[in-house]
Length: 363
Image (cartoon, rainbow, N blue to C red):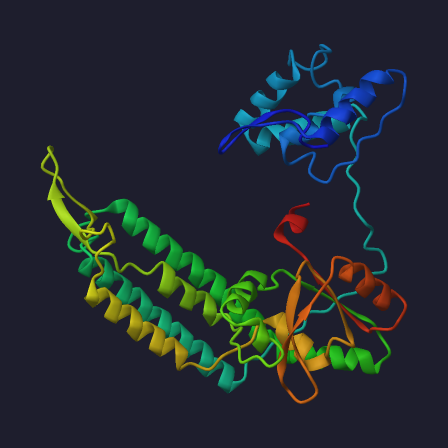
């Protein structure tokens, strides 16, 4: 019911949801009823309070807001600090309670990961590769007339650098997580030997990467795959789709400032800088020569097998490994998560892997 009022979106006004509208009508139709609001994001996003008429945040005189729209607009303009004030005042009035699970009786220990010499060499190799990518990126921007001694197209340079940094952070996040898995697998095996059940939370399933790779493979080959699902594929995607190779021409504006714009041929296609393409292809060859490190979810599934692991994620397809070591595509139906959860709760499977998104973490 959080979208109980129309709001301005990126592409214009977004209409209120039918659930939100019905929720408001129900409150208006039953003015004497008692109402309890339960929200996971009520204190983080002001529009998620737009259905909570009974709190008296507007049109009551208790708060300085003449209407719901006035409340939302005023609080949004003041940011998260204003939401904290609202939450504080509602608590003081006895209208708001924030609850969390008790940690009484909970024990935890930190699992320290010591990288092997092979892992250290692999990490250093990838770090060196990213240093080369950064250097070649600067040379490619210069070859395309985007920047050099000075920047001729600030937007194009910012886009190229921003995408590079984004892919770099994502890659090393997956790389470090993948390197932790061998030690994690040993700890899981010890827990299973003690008769314990294991719950694992992951923050990424690499589903988008998997979808892109499967789109490149005919469905007839899905039963015997030869597929690279390592984090380096994120960098490969960047090099092939976002690395600057389009040639720009430098012009002088009426203010005398030199700027560059993309060059197009007679057919309207962008002109490619062969020098930039050569720099990109050299990077692709270098990355392809480095040792692959599979993603965390794949490592766990391939080691323990799907008969022992209950996977509760949003993936509709996944790549599994059979007894002979062959990779194949497994399709998951809409009820897969419910069935997997039931299998874990009944003891049919000893390991539960749950997708834990950043959005869930914020809640």
